[in-house]
Image (cartoon, rainbow, N blue to C red; front, side, top):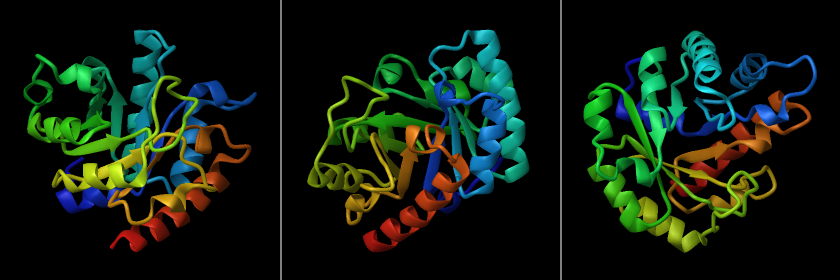
Length: 220
C-alpha cells in the first residue's frame, strides 16, 4: 500500500504485534488478528519466533491479505526475505540487522522500514539507515524480551526528540500503564500480550485504541 508520512505517523496509534502462544482452542492467528483490526488496531506486525520459514511465510501471506482488506499497514519482523516474498508493506528489524547491511537498498524506497531503538544513538542510526519509523523500548518491563531494560520517561522523550520520523513505544504496555507515556512524544503504542494474551483481544484492542488516542492528544 502507498502511504504518506502523515498516514504512517497516524498508523502508529495502535500497533499490534502477533504472538501465537496466546491462541486459545479453535482460534487461528488470522481470526484473532481480524478481531483486533475490527476493534481499532492501526498497524500489524507478524512476529513469530518459533515458526519455521514455511509456516511463517504462509501466516504472513494470510495476514497480508487481511490487512489489505482493512487498509492497515503490515510488516514482517526480522525476515526481509519473507517480507519481500509475501509482498508485505515492509519489514521491522533490530539494530544488529542494520550493521553492515543496507536494508533500505534491499527492500527499495517504497517499502516501510521500521527499526528498533533503545538509545538516542540507536534512534539516530536508524533514521540514517533509512528507517520510516522507530520502535522505542522497552518502555516498561516486559515478558516478551527477558533481557530488555525499561527506560524512564525522560529517556523516551530524548529519543523521540532526536529524530524526525515517527516513534512507537513498545515493551510491557498495558491499559493500566499506557497513560504514563503521555508527554513523551511517541506517536502510539506497540503491544503484544496486552492484546493477543487478553481474554477478549477485541475488547482489549478497543480499550487500548481509546487510551492511545488520549495519550497522543496529551503529547500535542
